[in-house]
Every structure is written in structure tokens, then in C-alpha cells.
Length: 145
Image (cartoon, rainbow, N blue to C red; front, side, top):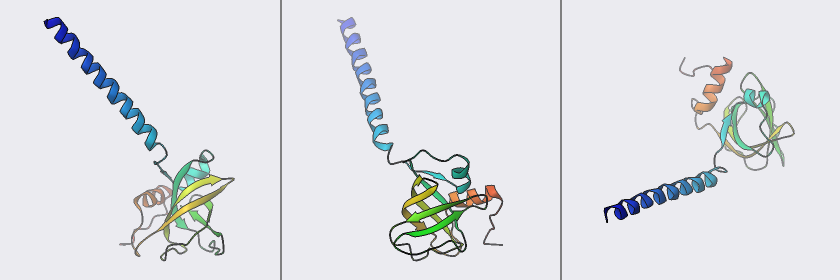
């Protein structure tokens, strides 16, 4: 009798681990498309992402690069590299040249095709990822100084 209870308990524990493994696999599969990695323009220039891969790029909008029209064109830079960007849509009100931005999209034929553009929200804010990328390039200037 004791052997039967022990066997049943082991079977339940094994079944629970199998169930948890399958559930974790389904969760990982569901999240794979929802994860957008951040890259700086220098990282994109060094190792271009795979075609169709959705990621975020951030930096400063290069001065003199903004062209408005049906397709908005501009370049984003971190001081080490510059990546051309295209965007179809309405830009945020605070979007301007020499200001921080983050775009979500994919890299196609040497151009980042953005599906979403985020801009800074006041004169001193810049996303942490952009600050880190600019510090790596040695071009970040603290607004407090």
C-alpha cells in the first residue's frame, strides 16, 4: 500500500513538472514577437540586424536631416554613426532636430523604417538607453552642468 502511494506521488510530481515546462514553452513562444531590443546607431552600423527584425533605435536627430512630407525622412546619430530613418505618420509635438528620440521598426536596405516614434518630453529628459549610447561614444553632455 505504501509503495502505491509513493508511486502515485512521484507520478503527480513528474506530471506537474512536465505541465510547467510546456506552459513555460508556450509563454516563451508568445513573447518572442513582443520583445523589442534597443540598439544605438553605432551598433546598427557595426552589426546590421536581420531583415524583418523589429527593434528600437535611439539617439539624437541629426541637424539638417529632417525632411517632412508624405514620408518623413531624417537621420538619427549617437556621435559615432548615423542611420537614415523613414516614418509614415504624425510626429510627436516635441520632435525636433538635435533632440533625443527612440523609434521602433526594422532595418531594410540600409534604412530604418520606423512604425513608431517617441520624443523626449521636456528640455532635460532623455531615455536611459540613449544616454548610455551617447556616453559610450563620449558625446553626452549632462544638462545639469
